[in-house]
Length: 251
Image (cartoon, rainbow, N blue to C red; front, side, top):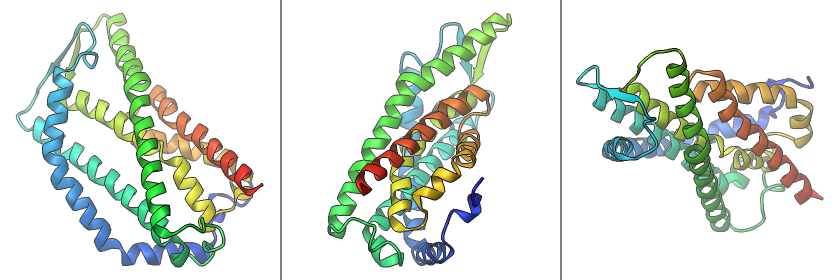
C-alpha cells in the first residue's frame, strides 16, 4: 500500500508544522476558551430550539430526562464541540496566512496572492463547506437516522423513549461531524500546497485513506454502521473532488 500512512508526510515539513503549532498554542487555547465560554449559552438555545422544532422527534417517540444534571452536561458537550470547531478553523486560517513562511516547501506551492487574500479565501471556503455540512446533516443525515431508529424500535414492539442527553447528543454530534467532515477538501488542498504531502502519495495510499476516513467517521459520529458510512462517505467523495481540483489546477 505504497509508503503507508506514516510515510505519506515529509518529516522536515512535519517538524516545521509541529514547531509552528507549538509556538501558536496559546493562540489556539485562547480561541478554544472563547469558543467554550461563548458556546455554553449558545448550547442552551440550541437545546431549546431542538425541543421546540418539528421533525427532530419522530411520531411515537417520547424524550425524557433521567437526571437533573443532563441539561448542564449537554451544554458543556455542545460548548466543547463549538470550541473545537472554532479552533480547527483558526488553525486553517493561520496556516493560510503564514503557510509560505512556516513550511519550507510551501513557498513554491501556495498561491502567490497576498496573505490577506489567502485568508479571506480560506474563510469563505471554510464557511461555505461548513454550510454544506449543515445542509447535508439537516436534510439528509439526521432525518434518515432518526426515522430509521424510530421505525426500528417500533418494529421490535418497543416503546420509543429517548433520553434527552442521548437524543440531543446524537443530533448535535451529527451536525458537528458533518461540518468538520466537509472541511476535508480545504485541508487536503492545504496539505498538498504546503508540501506536507504529495498528490501521488495520496493516490497510491487511497485504500488506507478510505479506511482511515471510515474509522474517523466512527469516532466522530454516533456508534452505528449507518452513521459511519453516512458521515465517512461524504469525506471520501470530497477528498476525491479536492484531488481532481488540484490535478486540473496543476495542469
